[in-house]
Image 1 (cartoon, rainbow, N blue to C red):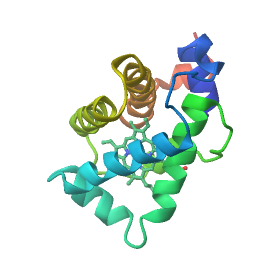
Image 2: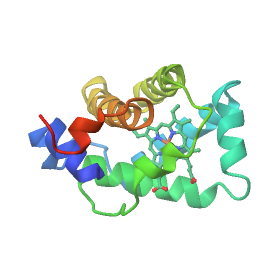
Image 3: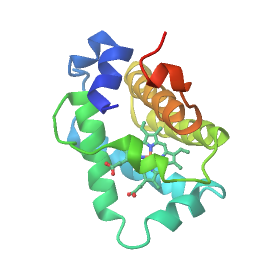
Image 4: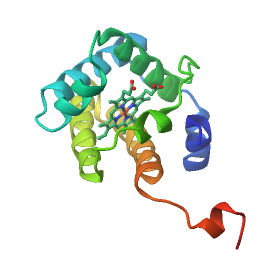
Length: 148
Ligand code: HEM
């Protein structure tokens, strides 16, 4: 499952770049940095990220800025694969996604006008749903084998 196929299926108009005032790589970079500052301080999520990102955070923050610029501005900057990156996180639960989304909603509301924040949150919720499906649910063998 690629990010593009996920978004195409979830939301046909997702291919349009968002054209809201004040939404550019600079403001998206600020969102990413302030969001991960909250994540790193959180008592449950902080240690999960600290185990995975042991050195310099800068490459992760740049990658996540590329990711959000691709999602929101259709910049094409991100070429990674989110699903495998999360499948290897064995101690993450569905409840952790609620914490992640709450921190993301809070950060978006602090930085953007409500209608702009709502677009970021909508995309985050859709992608979180795709990641949760990949991480916590398995298709029945008949479905994967092409059965009815
Ligand atoms: C509880 C929820 C989540 C946890 C604990 C989590 C944790 C992580 C960690 C530890 C990494 C770094 C993996 C690595 O570098 O090896 C990562 C990467 C990433 N995460 Fe999450 N994540 C969560 C939810 C989300 C959500 C909801 C999104 C999108 C809306 C997202 C998007 C990404 C992306 C794009 C990457 C980079 C993947 C790559 O290309 O390497 N994550 N996440």
